[in-house]
Amino acid sequence: MRVSITSIAFIASLISTQTIAATYIQAGNLIPADSDKLMSEVTVVVDGDKISEIHQGYVVGGEQDEVVDLKAHTLMPGLMDMHTHVTSQHNGPASYMERFTLNEADYAIKGVQYAKRTLLAGFTTIRNLGDAYNESVALRNAINKGIVEGPRIFTAAKSIATTGGHADPTNGTAKRIQGDPGPNEGVINGVAQARKAVRQRYKDGADLIKITATGGVLSVAKSGQNPQFMNDELQAIVDTAKDYGMTIAVHAHGKEGMERAVKAGVTSIEHGTYMDKATFKLMKKHKTYYVPTVMAGNWVAEKAKIDGFFPELVRPKAATIGPLILQTLSDAHNAGVKIAFGTDSGVSAHGDNGLEFVLMVEAGMKPIEAIRAATYHGASLINQLDNLGTVETGKYADLVAVEGNPLDDIKQMQHVTFVMKNGKIYKAPEA
Image (cartoon, rainbow, N blue to C red):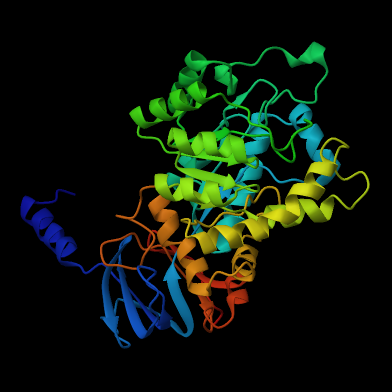
């Protein structure tokens, strides 16, 4: 059958005049997160993947538009976890054998499962701060293409360490199989290798850089506090990363190592257990963010009580360092250090991320401060405030909701009932 040009033009005109349905979210409360304010009886209109309008009062659109009734809920920006390891999860003694028994594909498939759990818990954006084989890069790409469901991922891919340092992947292995990992594997010694490791991360597709400036808790190495980079190495990493537009997240427990990193100009300190007043002053001077990960500290401290759960080198570190992070957060908050939300999920279970809100409030933060740490400040940390982190017109429609008012009961943040990312609803209250 021959179709005339006139018929084609007529069909095209019909298509062009069709109204694309919008979503009208009627929320009993709204936390925009651009300040400490709470709004009541608000309608947020989502058109495509963006927030197009915000109305005071309950508004409905046309017949084709969808209405989401959240009148008994509090709506807020999609939550942001700034410290995760989305392709792994610690499961006790067996976890230390996985690097010998699992392949890259195994980690990637685990990541698909953990990413969806994270999204359904209300976390629409995460930073992934270290993996084994750059599998989080593939996971990020698959999510961005719509192949699998998960949060927006900003990944550091493989962390950068020094020989024998936290994140040297050969720690705890027999010397005959250790080899001599270098910048390609994220292990450096000296300025030239530091620069090469950053450039390799860029080549691998990482969004940011993660370094381990001090010893760590779960690595099979004696010290959890000692500094593990020299000043010139740190400066080379920072300068090179900035050339490539990459921020720098820093694992650090010990005071000396984290202060060296702050002075070099890194973006955030993770964990930060042995910070003190001098460290707080330095971080405020350099506008360095602090990502506490209190959940991880609590988790490792509890597991250290179980015989055989951790290797004997790890157990005393977990028992000593873990319980201190809550107090560190309290002191940092009182000192006025900028704080962004992070859990270190992958140590504890993915999907349990919301517990960190409860612990942040226990440390002395107001509920609105904890929520803004996981929205506004998360977006600020990753330089995404133009797109994410607050409920404003023109920003991406990443929105979550909980029943009631979390400013009255912060535990509600562990029970997210509505999740929208990029304008698509992934979870909604039962009718």
